[in-house]
Amino acid sequence: MLAGLDSALWPLMCLAAVGLQCGTAAAASRDGRSGGTHGTGSVHAGSERSSANTTDDLVAAGRVGISASPLLQPLAPPAPERIANGGYPRGVVHAGMYVVCVGMTIYARAVTAPASTSPAWIQRGTVATDTRPGVDLANCNLAVRPATPAHTGTAMPLLVASYRHHTGCHSGTIGYADDGQGQKAGPGQRRDLPHLGSAFVCSNYTIQVSTSLDAGVTWRFASTVVSGPVGMWEPFLLYDDPANSTSTGVAAAAQGPLLRVAYSQELTNGGLQSIVWQRSGDDGATWAQPVTISDGREHLSRDGMPGIARLIDGSLLLVFEGFWAHGPGHFSVQSRRSRDNGLTWDDGRVIYATTDRSRNAGAPQTAVQPSGRVVVSFMTNEDVPRPSSWPDDAWAKVIVSNNTGSGGDEVMFPAAGKRVVCTGPACLWPGLFGQDPVLMLYGLHGVSFMQPISDTPAEHPPTVPTRNRTV
Image (cartoon, rainbow, N blue to C red; front, side):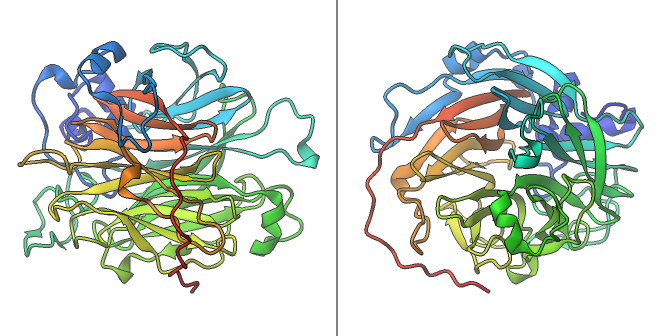
């Protein structure tokens, strides 16, 4: 959370909360992000954005639940679970529990807890705190260290959290940027265009990592991954299987599985943005130099919000938002794929774009179902009548593939695989974790929810030859 922010920043922080009502819950949610990719958008008036809404209220209002085509519709749409006040939820399955970071606070419940609209989520601990004025502490993301022979018999597998920890943050602008329509934002104007980055600037931007050996109750600072004067956002953690680590050039002295962190790296503050990642062979204590895996200059884009999953054929799938389909200022969802454990990546392709070029689809994450089909979550304002504010008016959706991408095939996402999970406005920053079932997380009006995504059979089309190219 942004504990200790100077009171002068609160109006700005409420803008960054993409329209959530000002107050403790809104500040806690901000949905974790100062808009490192999206910016702010307009503020919605009215008390309906209060975090006081209960799960039952939201279900009764039809704001949460699954709506899908007959092909993929589950027999009984599962009810969403309310986790806690706050936004940008990210989770893992760990030690027989669902462990979710909301803001910078860890919540958990037993995997075997009976299904209900209000299961027992317990607050366990806080990843990191910083009460100094002008601190931006958010984007918590979790990973669990896989078991290895050297760690067999330990009481609890290592839980790792990455997050952004920016300092010296204040209202202001930097330089000029084009909004894609010839408009300019210059000195003295707030950076509130969708692709101009955060509504505030910081003197230093940092991605850090902390670790826990008791499932999130207590945390130890591990390292600073990267720090500098140019914006970086939305770190995503991924542990590699030890069998794959030898192909990445990691020194033999590195014990255990390879840990990687991918994040959005602005090329200039408020300008183009790339996705880079770094690797660690010692559970985040030290890090190799950054490597670019999606260069924003290729499409004059703000490539951001990375999510990565390993498909059943062993390849890696990266999903992210960017300006690939509709040009500057309007997001679509893209993917890139690596078949050599991340050494090289293909040219990429758009996997979801709105029909209306003025609308957005962004903030994707991905996971793989037991069948091998791929789920991609994202948020979009494509269903909202004009005028629409992005990302304030977003709905949360998923697309589900009808194949596994094995044998050289591309992963195919037919229209029948699209499902609405949460109707907006303000269904924000969805995330995915788990496998059986895949679980979707999202924020709605300052409250974080969890909901399973069913793995129901779908028709498999003929094999489609891959058009990807390894570069």
